[in-house]
Image (cartoon, rainbow, N blue to C red):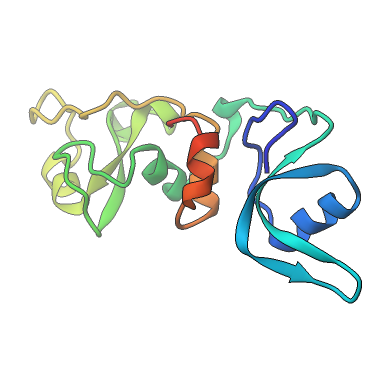
Length: 162
């Protein structure tokens, strides 16, 4: 679902999208391959909709809850120390909490289990393990990636790279 300004704001169900379309609160930007059928109506399956009226959405990313999936999505499911995509991902505090590190977006990175064990309770400089990318608060669109396991091709043009 896009705001009237074309900003991605939510992932909703096809049912919710159809209701918004029927109430004339949204328009279809991208259609699916099949249609929704009712007794007296056929509606193309909405894949991307845009609200007709702008809705103010608070976007204080720093207050967004930090979850493992959000950190993984921000870091593109890649270990930030060795750069490899791994199945057994963990999160790591760049500056360990025991050394005064905080649980904030700019101190937490995706890390594979072997790198996490190797780094242990050390500072990155002590073990020569600096993150590939400097951790920071994610772009709000990262939460779209968290909400759905795969991003349909039709959505790509509406999502800004996180």
